[in-house]
Image (cartoon, rainbow, N blue to C red; front, side, top):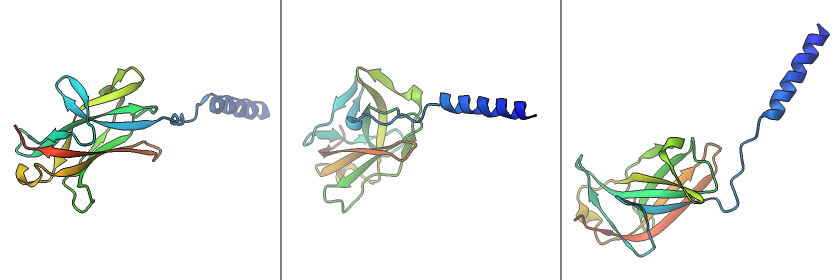
Length: 159
């Protein structure tokens, strides 16, 4: 009996030793907000214009995406927020993306996620068009580690 218990404990110790802990984010780990276009991601620079899109279901949104550096986002949550630059008014509708490995493209030293929408809680594009706003991408890993990127841009009227 003692032999069986000893073997079981030894096997359990080997199994635990073989398990890798969660990898730590790299020192340059970050999320980078970008505009999502038909050709992929395009830079979203501070001071640039981002077009308001009137969606097929009758609401408004921005076409956005992210570049992710230094972390594995599988199992993470991603959301986009849109605020007045002084933080006094939120223009975004609550929407969170649960991230899975198959929804990313490996590009060089990072991952890209395209085709997301920052849904807007506005009745008409004129509420936001021409305003300077902050657009945020917030990536929260399964362990609670959080990365953010904010861009101060101008909302452009729909085409």
